[in-house]
Length: 139
Image (cartoon, rainbow, N blue to C red; front, side, top):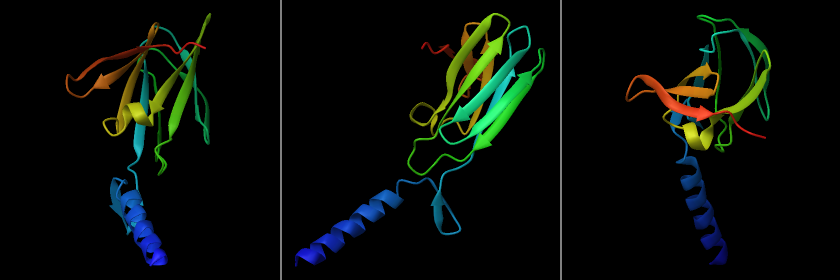
């Protein structure tokens, strides 16, 4: 009797765990790819270095005007995929959590950001404006 209850509980746990995923592809559960684009709105050139706990995307130079940098990734199954970027231009060094699963999922499958002197602003799909603004992170 006890082993039957354990099997039933294990089956319930597996169903609940697997149903927490958002997309089914080929019979395997996985999350959709996230696209991040950073647009330079500083008025001068900037160097950006983005990374997560598992991926270092390296340094990238974004020219002003009309410069941008883009990357994409698949969030992990546990909802812990976070990316942060360092931003450097003359006499300035800042960082920001450019993708936090808890903050950005699921509304940010395509995250468009503008880099500004006082922080970054994300495109708000409801207003079609870059009005979701955040100050730079502090240490």
